[in-house]
Length: 112
Image (cartoon, rainbow, N blue to C red; front, top):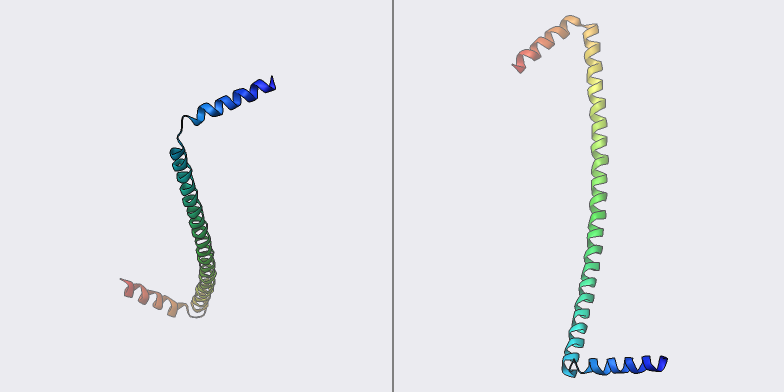
C-alpha cells in the first residue's frame, strides 16, 4: 500500500512538472525573491518610522507634562493672589467702610 502511494506521488510530481516550464518556474522564483526583498525593506522602514514616532511622542509628552506643571503653578499663584486681594478688600471695608464704598462707586463709574 505504501509503495503504491509513493508511485502515485511520483506520478503526480511528474505530471505537475509538465504544467510549468523551467523558464516560467525561474521567473516565479525570481519574482518571489524580489517581493521578499521589498517586504524586508518595507519592514525595516516601518520599524525605523515607528522608532522615530515613539521618540517624538515621548518628547512631546515630556514637554506637555512640563507645561501642565508650569500652568498649575501659575494657577496656584493666581488663586493665592486673588484670595489675598479679597482679604485686603474685606479688611478695607471693615476698617474704612465709607472709603471702600466711595472706591467701589468710582470703580463702577470707570467701568461704564
